[in-house]
Image (cartoon, rainbow, N blue to C red; front, side):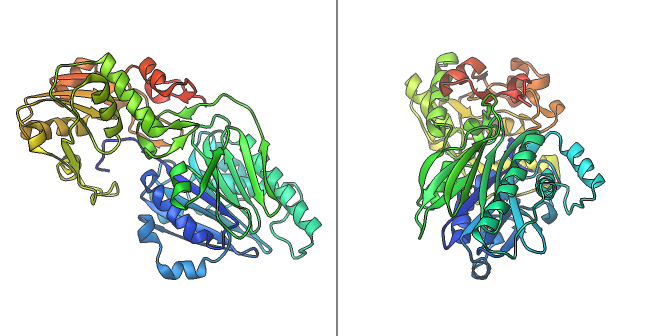
Length: 471
């Protein structure tokens, strides 16, 4: 991994009612590519059979034109992955699918379970077998077991309306029983041949939203972020609520509130993970970043000539800082967009050196100036040190480092790929020591209170900052 950043596990999508469900899923997943670059997959139903294609790499690498000729149908679930629980292999690529004599189910999962080891051992004791090391497959197998316990079988040779309704009722109940038993963070899209379900965990840690799309009938989309709805020319309806199941079939859409808990959306969605054009839980990601920068300018002002942001996620906060401080905004840093997150250099020294390839300074914006550089976070500190070197090499007279999130002191076990606590520079270094380590003239982080003020609410998981987790 060449980036000194946190990484979200993945992004999910579900489509119902569109003739070209697989193609729409492709466009939606491409818009969610920032959430995972290790693998991509789409499962699609034509009403009688589910077909699946998944592969390693980016969405554009995983799919070719001929794949869509085979993936015909009007119900689909899709997934892009960045691994946390489970290794980085094709076996752990999603969606996961379970086929039976008369039917199949497919599932895509964003998040991470904290009790997946216990659940897996229980299922293995009951005779379940697994093809992966992913906690997401545990969810799939648990749904299957609950469904069988309820007296159901997936699919039916009897196409009568009454039998189909009973089959769906039992399946929905199996999903409900499953999500009440698993613990952790999860946003799920689940499908059978004739049914699509979206589920968000009781705390809403991972995001999931609902929209409509144009189609021959009532057509819907579920997605990790609203930008995916925009990508298919859809209309955003609302966020799926914490502890809610959304069920979509040919009779329409309905909701089940399977449990009630305090909303605790991952605060890092607004700092770094989400695209700036997304809206999560009624909060505009870009507007949140503007406001974080404004609060940071008030809390950590410094005399300077220019404000710059580290692309891409530091730019919104830099614009807000400039607006509030009156210090002019400049581009300052250019990003090579052809260097993806998937690049792996063999040594730590080479990984750090990749920062010079990915980012470069614009000398005319910086030479002889006192520069305020805004980044979204400091994790290990290696990227920050390289950034300061880049700016000084371009002639910056002073470099004042400002961070639009508080110090990251604790690792995450709820769906973010984080270093160990020992690798988090803020867990073992005080402010002045971090400043010296990265080589800046000054350093300041936004306060946690200031960040909450910027977001206009206090309904977030802040475990990476204060060690307090909702699960």
